[in-house]
Image 1 (tube, rainbow, N blue to C red):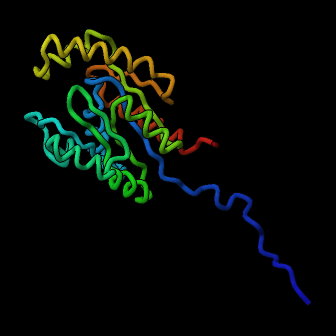
Image 2: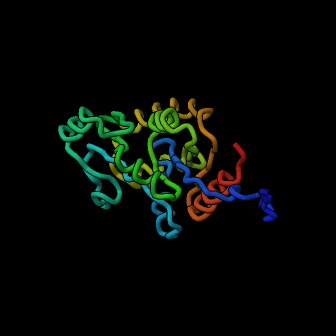
Image 3: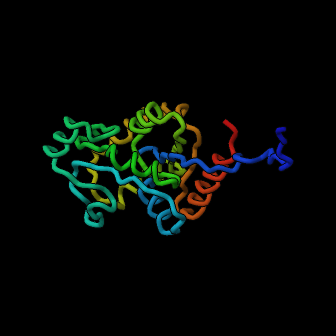
Length: 207
């Protein structure tokens, strides 16, 4: 004679499982992507971060393996041939790319993953990781944007003209993104808080 279990069934069992999500912060050059990522890191919230590789030379304040992984153009091209990037692009004469091993390792860490890439790279990541959440970061206005380039002191009038034209094309891709976030000068904490709110929202979204 069989007996049925009298144990009550938990109707909500399994609904609280947390899946790691990939958050991609993108936008025009000098929108503040690097600054925002660094500010999130300083809060020590347990996120996994993916460090972009590049063939350009480091700026005075940048450190290899922290801000970027810096390679020569020849070494970068060899890594492309070996299939070591999930996405890469030639940006203003230098390569930028996201290493495959980094992103796969990060996604298996059971932590949310954050990385920053250019606009074209964000589109590629969405094609390979459909559940990725894309955040488009912009400065408050063009005057504020130009002042950031002046503070860098690395641009010529010609290169600024190229960046402005490129930004125009990038803004046309806004419809591919999930969120638009204005990164106002002097309001970095507000920008970070909004990104953290987006992360909470995405974990509660029914897909």
